[in-house]
Length: 434
Image (tube, rainbow, N blue to C red; front, side, top):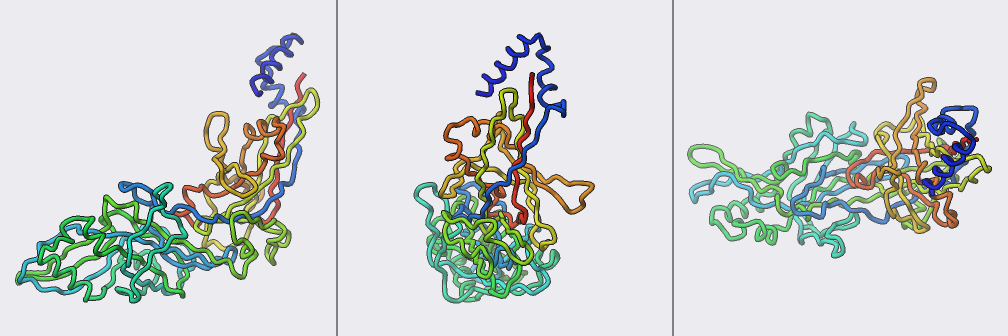
């Protein structure tokens, strides 16, 4: 339809004896021909029922394993718990004369952290009682999955969540488990001879945050960055043997992520098909209402786009943009996302597909800073191609539901948050031609 319109304009300009090369100037550059209409967008907040937190591939690793608990005054408490497998990874051969010393858990901090880092954090490491189950439809594991674990932790660790302290994320574990693994290494038991047999025997580990914790941070998921280490010695010195994450069973590594919005307006959202209207989320610091999108917690911004009239005989839509103003003076524990994405949706609030422009690129919104208004940033989403196509449909009113969110591919790996306390607007730019 756009090509037909363009062809029609060329013919019209030719019939009027106009220079075809001036069409772009006539439509856009000459401001006297431009009219801008602004529409408030009916907006609400929705919450995903679930989202993947595993890669689905044995050879592919997650960006990070997030562990912790954080209380966000906007969206409530979010808890993330990593589950992962370990396998024999190598070290010194255990001879009959060697003597067991200890067992430790070792992990590498990936320098990612959100929340209040001013209080002590405590973690508990548990051995799993079963291996995770993959979703039969897509071989993924979702954020609402759990795996049973032993009643008593292998060990616990308390630390200040500073960059320096988290570099040394290491603590001692139960010696009964350590001696069992040490004996199997010394006897060259079949369970330590290959990865699969060991996974069937040991199952895996989960690192759980204490209910008193106040922040979430990331650990490296690389095979040599997280696992347990057996410490022992011979007559000549100290030795170690490691059990680390497998390079071949990454599909079983995932995170359970739970958000409890009790005490906030978003507690009303109990399933994905429900909407919390913008005005229904009003609170003391958002007197007109509020909407939010945030990673880990699963919140997305739902919009129903107004369908603008096409204009008179000599008018056409040349640009359509959505503007969202981030709420000011909210906590800096959860930074704004660098980019937000635009998804087609439906009445059940599913993210059907990523919206693309005419070049096939994903439609995204970036933060624009206004020099004359410090602190008053705006996300601008250019939806011109999508909106032109939508407005030309006879069933536009049945296909105008969209979602704005942090990238769904980052829902499991980022705790960034966009909070909006002004109703988002749609700006439609019309141009006249002769």
